[in-house]
Image (cartoon, rainbow, N blue to C red):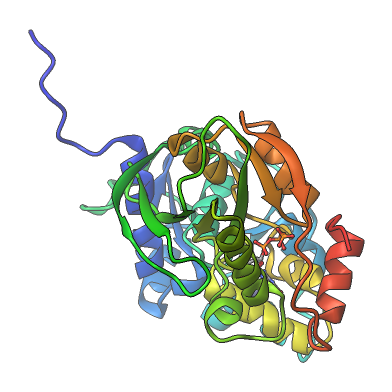
Length: 358
Ligand SMILES: Nc1nc2c(ncn2[C@@H]2O[C@H](COP(=O)(O)OP(=O)(O)OP(=O)(O)O)[C@@H](O)[C@H]2O)c(=O)[nH]1
Ligand SMILES: [Zn+2]
């Protein structure tokens, strides 16, 4: 018999559907466990989950460190949820907003036995859905409620770590203040994920290294002119230099807040107002200091026909990443603009902790 044309969702598509489910507060089924994101969990669903058995709260090792929960699974902790724990208790463990006001949440008891893979997949799904990286899990004993998204946890982890393919969708001329000969290209991943943009200035020769910038979205800096970072001035300066030289390419990657999303970035800013620096704030929320996937930038440059760049950056990690994904960095062009009294400490932290060049 001939294999019928498959109309059903692929693994990548089901993963994206699972992210939308978690954002709505719906459970997903991960290798026989029901998993929900703590951030979007409702009282009603918590009650329903409790009826199924003992609950486990999955947190990243970063968050567990702040909460003094034991980490037996390297990058994550699986905390036993006491029978009398309510939604406020779960939320307080997931969200560090009130840590300083209510430091004692424990003592917490972590699971050692059992499989950590579904918990790891749940955290990664929550993270990549730009939610707080905390998930509640319970083994599914009976039949799964109808309509839930089912995923194999190990396959999910493997696929999310793979490179995403992008296709050009549309492009048109956009004359800009900084460069009249501008063209905006939209790139879309084939799994329904986030779109990213490329702004091509002039007609750069594909045989030569192109003046390039990988800019990560920063609503506060790019749009509002926030003085807390240097993003806005960097964006302007990069486009102006490309305009002056008559050629260049700027990728605008929708990885707001170094990949944690704008809501989490505002949580990080609130922690910074409590005295934590930009890296500590990410860690207290349970994130790595940088959650961006820079392979996207390399993939889009290659799609546009570029193989060699003069990269405008102060971040050596961007240079290393491009080099390891088939893009030659012929030159690093420093981009030092926008220093203000408000961002001096932020830039100093990036230099001290993230290897940025001052
Ligand atoms: N999580 C978090 N993200 C921030 C903070 N301040 C700025 N960002 C984000 O950091 C990113 C800015 O990084 P980029 O300017 O692209 O790159 P970079 O790593 O600083 O390196 P350069 O190429 O030298 O600029 C944007 O996504 C901002 O939204 C912060 O305090 N916390
Ligand atoms: Zn910024």
